[in-house]
Length: 109
Image 1 (tube, rainbow, N blue to C red):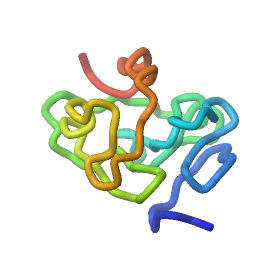
Image 2: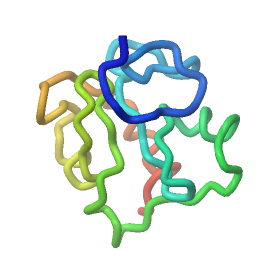
Image 3: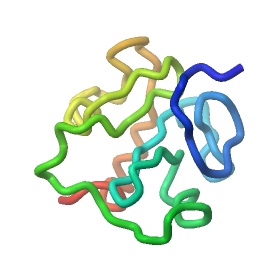
Image 4: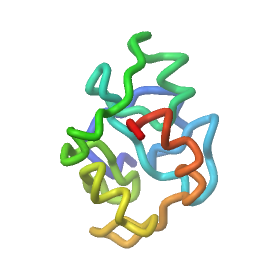
């Protein structure tokens, strides 16, 4: 059963946007890629099935909604996600704090 109305591309495993690359309990966000304005579960899914024109979100656009909670479908701005303490502000589902290790693959420093 799909828990959100947004289309998420990639190699999905479940309805909370987990993929074949990241499938732990807390791997439940999708990121809208700046280059193609399309949600993917991770950078690897985008690399394998995306637009082929990878570009990171510029800091000047961090007020855009680009993070999707796979648990409830709430969209967060990038700034909201950065300040979320790895928890959805809408449904309180936990996000994987390890995602911060890949921040540079999605967002300008």
